[in-house]
Image (cartoon, rainbow, N blue to C red; front, side):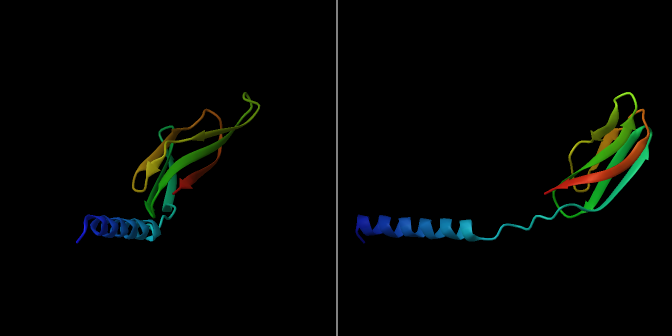
Length: 101
């Protein structure tokens, strides 16, 4: 086999492998599921046990001193992990889970 033919076959094989890699479907990404929230000891928490991606606890409170609503969010945590945020001194009106992934 000539050197030119050898490199042509090699380049063709590399292009075929690269094309298969690009066109192959990626693993499905699903937002976290089975999420729960709770409050304890001055903190709000969230935990998700299904899906993939990350989640973060969010707290909505109203502050007469700040002149309106206050939004506090926790750290982004992977599925199975716990996100936490300190509860403000004002009344908590709502807690929910932000999801990404």
